[in-house]
Length: 283
Image 1 (cartoon, rainbow, N blue to C red):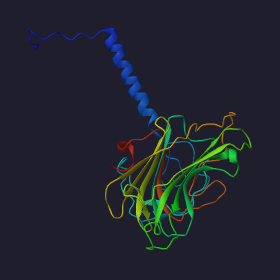
Image 2: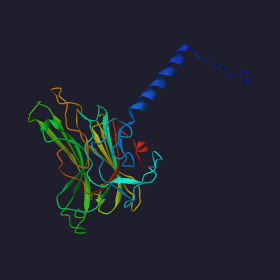
Image 3: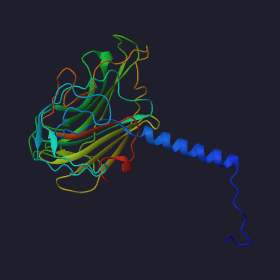
Image 4: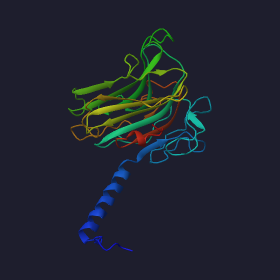
């Protein structure tokens, strides 16, 4: 029963229209935040893209067990029984994978061994032609590869490389940007051989930042986070309007360079800026 002094609720056409617009915007935002590619390495669908239309061109080798990767995956609740055990093949994906807002890359990774001054590719759209070099996410040896030799001698760092093309086909004006968190400072993120990690890199073109995430799944602990100021500009096309034609690759670059040694899994790519609550692991 309505209290006698309470003002009756009146739903006007304007307020109803406003509510509908809010719901529409919320729905659009949710759609934009959805992943666009997701490679899970699970039995029966090793080469499949579970959310997009870019299957791998061949089924790579997989392994069962041997890691501390989450099972089930916290964000999705899906079971996780296999991981990629060799460089994966390319995906049939022309052009770059991101729009103007940003890009988020996620994966589980276990590095098996160290080699001095090496880089091992996790996810890339990186061809041999300069016009096809868009981005490359690597794990990179931080020192001389000698286990236990020094703080930076037995660790890997996440290395992001992105090229911006300005002068068209064969142009020389290319910006190469790197962001390399390593174990030199207290807030940096270092990865150790023989351990399993969740790693993510989030590119935010609105704030001109790159945020790195890492969680040690073997030793346990919190989700580590570090944000680096970094401007990448236009991800979509060269200034002359041509698209980068290098395909998306997992575990190596498009020409087979810098293959990854170890296990990697649950490779998810989102055409948006993910927050901590959106990631595959729980904060």
